[in-house]
Amino acid sequence: MLRSLLLTRLAALVLLLGPVAPALAQVPATDTLRKFENPEGVPAPLKKPWYRGKLVKATIVPALLIGYGISTINDNGIYSSYDAKNDIQQHFPGFRTRVDDFLIFAPYLELGAVALAGVESRDDRLNTVLLIAKAEGIMLASVFLTKRLTGVTRPDGSDKLSFPSGHTAQAFLAASIVHAEFRHKSQWYGVGAYTIATSVAALRMLNNKHWQSDVVAGAGFGILSAHLAYLSHRNRWGRKPHLLDGAHVMPTYLPGGMGLMVTWQPKK
Picture 1: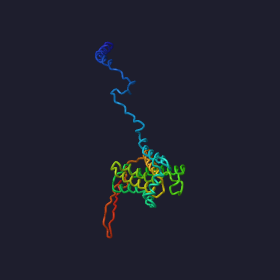
Picture 2: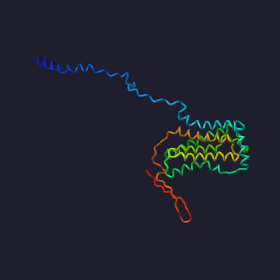
Picture 3: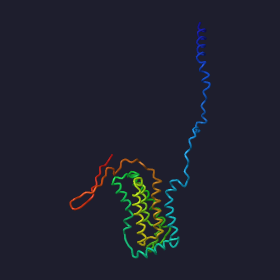
Picture 4: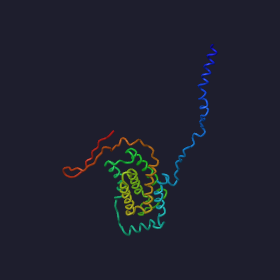
């Protein structure tokens, strides 16, 4: 009796599984060897050629400036440093000013003024300060090492630390920082900063403190230092808190004259 019952249930199970077995046999096995292939034909991202990389873009202009400056040292080049000095002495004899000693930091004043006016910079305040510190370190080390190694005599003969111009390098470094931080808002911030830097370079030549080669190369050193600081900067903590968020500047009238009123409400 028990045996016949077991045979009956086994026969029923065979009948139920009969239609399913062929279907299971037709399911293809998963091919794990081809799982990393690209069956839909999505093209792989193209690698940029080396001449379009960030490093090349950051160094091409400074390299041209430094190279041209080197090529015009003393009486070398198509329009040499001696030619430039002769033209300056002919048109601006006895020119003297100390404005260039203070004008080198004017782009940083522009940076602070624009920030106080509420214009959002590319980086938060902390990262901007870190970038400036890094760029200044690169510039000072490279410029003064080059001065010692080259030993070019100044036009006025005061010492042999003429090449490159430190004043010009400082001014163009600061201008490059302004341009990098605010060019997404307007290119005119950078135009104003570079105009100030170019004025510093011209004044150094008019004051007979530097040759043409010194100021052109100095501009290259300054721009290169700023670009290298940005390329190597990875310490980012986000844009909060903005130290100058909530700051407002407005003209005001006080007894005795006009003035500016600055209000600041710190934000968390």
